[in-house]
Length: 310
Image 1 (cartoon, rainbow, N blue to C red):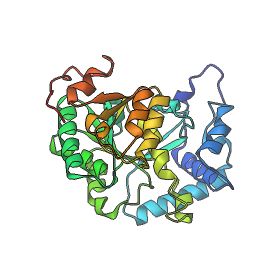
Image 2 (cartoon, rainbow, N blue to C red; image 1 turned 90 degrees about the vertical axis):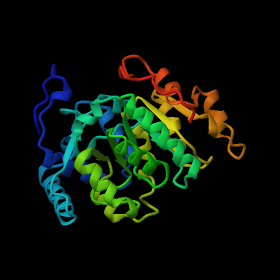
Image 3 (cartoon, rainbow, N blue to C red; image 1 turned 45 degrees about the vertical axis):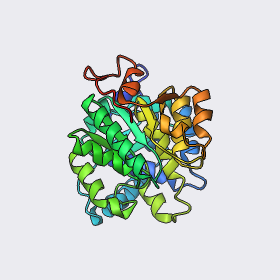
C-alpha cells in the first residue's frame, strides 16, 4: 500500500493502474456488492483507493483476467480513471454513490469540454428522432459536446447527429467496454471509441457472472453518472416508466439543469413532465432556450444562436 501523506491532495496520488483495476473488480465480486456498498467503504476515507481494500495478489489476478477478456474481444487500448488519483472528474462526487473506477476508450480530454446530455426513449417516435437531430445540431454549433448512453432510439440519434454535425460526443455505457448493447450499435460504439470517447463504470468480471436480468441495474446507474458528468440533461421524449427518469431525478439532486422539451408536456399520455417541472426542471422549445438557461461559466461563447422551435 502506498503511504498516505496527510497534506497531499488525494487527487494527485500515484497509482498502479493494473492493481487498481483488479482491486475494483475484486470488490465487485464480494457478496452483496453494489454501487452503494462500495461507495460506503470509501466514504470513511475519501483518500482511499480500491487497492487499499484488496491484497496485491488478489488484485493482479483479477486484473489479468480483465485484460485477457478485453484482448480476446479485440480491445488492445483502454485507460482508467480512479477516484483519488489523477484526472478523475471531481464533479462525479456529486452523485450519491460516486464511482471508484472508470474504464474508457478514446479522447479523455472531452470530459473537460462543455457537455450536455441528450437522452430519451429507446422506442423513439419519428418526431422524437427529428427533434433530437435539430437539438443536437444546434448544441454542436453552440460548442457543446453531446453525451448519451448509446442505447437505441434517442441515444443513438443524439450520437449520430453530433457526429454528422462535425461535433464531439461521449458515450456512457451500461455494459463493460467489450460488450455492445444493442448489437446494432456495435459499429457506432467502435467509431466513438476510436474518434471520440466511450466510458464504462461496469465491472467486467461481475457483469460476466450475471445475466441480462441481474445486470439490468447497471443501466440506471450509468444514467446517474451521465448526469454528474454533464452540466445539463435534455429529455427529448420518454414514457412514465422510462429509465430516463433515473437521470432526471439525479440531475435535480446533483444540482444540474434538467430541460424538458415542450412536446413532452403536450403529450397527455404521460405525467412525468409536470412532476419534474414542479421540482425545478425547465421547459424548452429551442436550442437557445437550453443554452440561455446555462451558467455563463458553462456556456461556450458561440451559444445562443439557434432559436428555431424544436
